[in-house]
Image (cartoon, rainbow, N blue to C red):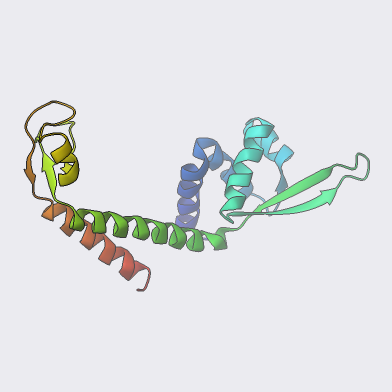
Length: 169
């Protein structure tokens, strides 16, 4: 795996589980397979946290797991390994989720008329809500005026087009 791919994997790990996840992935990148206890020994992150992060990474298919049984205790031993080849699929899936959310937001922006007091910290409200508020901002109590959201619509449309191209659609 190239350095760039590992950098991407570390960034994704950080998003999923924070700085501890990066330490865990770095430790795992040095070996083919490891146990949670070995990760604890190398990272000094407590066992419960290591397991929690490993399961989060597992939920996204970024790590795989193999179980064996300890012959003396009968307990299961979990052997973990990175699955960097799943990184691209994870990223594509995240892009699809973002695309879906952006499309919903674009539809909302296109189908509503907004009003705004133009005060920092306040937000535009749809016409129906503005009517209920008698065109007074619910935060600062200033009058609400029509808000032109064409730049938001344009920005969302551009981002959606960009994501569709990246996803091959």
